[in-house]
Amino acid sequence: MKPVRRASVLISGTGSNLQALIDAIFEGRLELEILHVISNVADAPGLQRAEQAGIRTSILEHGRFAKRDDFDAALALLMSVGKPDLVILAGFMRIIGEAVLIPFEGRMINLHPALLPKFRGVDTYQRALDAGENIHGASIHFVTAELDGGPVISQVEIPVEQGDDAERLAARLGPREHELVVATVEFLTRHAVECDDGTLIVDGKSLDTPYLLQADGALHAR
Ligand code: GRF
Image (tube, rainbow, N blue to C red; front, side, top):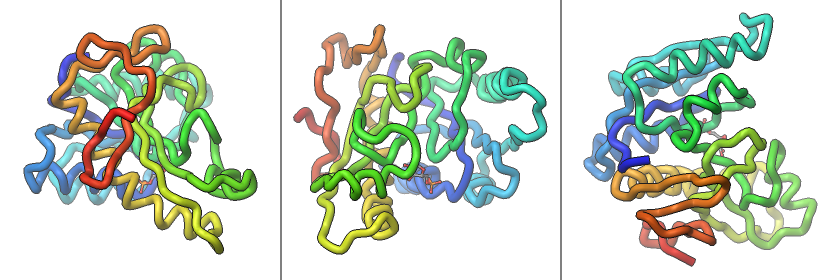
């Protein structure tokens, strides 16, 4: 994937990560055009955020499709609008199938609230607490057929504090996730990042360990 100029964003809910991207663009911290925001939930608050920023929106409710494949085919068609360099899944709570994966392979990233490969799937905060983790965090990875299993580009870590419950941990991770999504997309506007058979290639060199978001708000090699 060449350095990214234009992206579309898939959401299902609040859209606070979408808002972080919009804010970074408006404040001149991120050189990116958001072409399209697509939601599979008709009343997702994130749609209003997009409209307020003058971004085209579409709703594609999965419940209206009898077959999963039909939803995926319609989604792939909507995702192609404007030919984005990158599609960002920011709180998109739907597993996507081949009709999307094949045309968008290597051009789709997902934000996941856990330090992958730990805690794929849902309820990550509670599962991290139950496992007695001292550190929790979020990851951004390329989307592949394996749920939350594609190569990880970047991560942010936060300490688990005494007395944390899932809600408190999620509330503390939220703002760091926003920083991570902005820093990672910004990185992708400046670097050529490829996903080659499970390996990440950044500017021609393979990346063995994901970048870590540091206190300066930028991604650094570990
Ligand atoms: C984030 O916590 C993200 O990690 C998860 O869903 C949440 C999305 O939040 N995949 P928002 O819709 O961006 O506010």
